[in-house]
Length: 78
Image 1 (cartoon, rainbow, N blue to C red):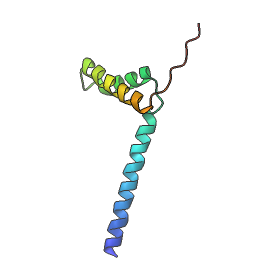
Image 2: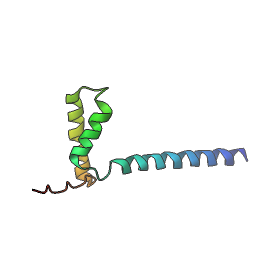
Image 3: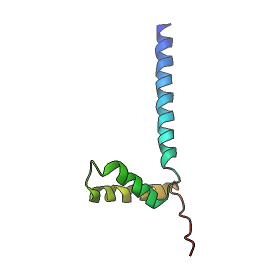
Image 4: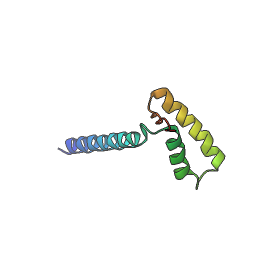
């Protein structure tokens, strides 16, 4: 009975972590490049110098573009 309880607890923890990760991914998926960069600056500017945040942003945007997770920018109306 004790082993079954531990197994159930472990399964619940794994499911919770998987749900958290998918929620975090969904929050970033579909953002446009300027939105991604703005979000990074908002979260990291207080901890990391701005030029390092730009480097991180370049890598993240490149990876998101490769995976197809980057949203399309709406054409500007003139």
